[in-house]
Every structure is written in structure tokens, then in C-alpha cells.
Image (cartoon, rainbow, N blue to C red):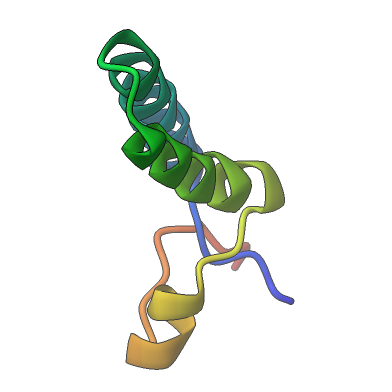
Length: 62
């Protein structure tokens, strides 16, 4: 898996994931589990949808 998520994108995903989990917890809803997906992609630096569409926000050397 090649990194295709840049630093800013990773931070935004992590924050959004934490917010979704917090709202799910506050509302006592299992929908908060969806917040794990952006946290996972933020931690790994790889997004399957970016690969599918051939997109990358990761800066490359060159």
C-alpha cells in the first residue's frame, strides 16, 4: 500500500473521526463506530477510494 494521504488530510480525517465517535457516544448510537474508518485511513496513510480514483494528496519528492 503506497501512501496517498497527505499530512493535512490525515489530520482532518483524524479530527472528523474523533468527532463522529464522540457524537455517537453522546447520542448512545452505534453509528459512532463509523468514525473508526477515517481514523484507520489517517493512521495508515492509505485510502482505498483515492486509489480507485487515482487521486493523491501526499506530496511526492521530485
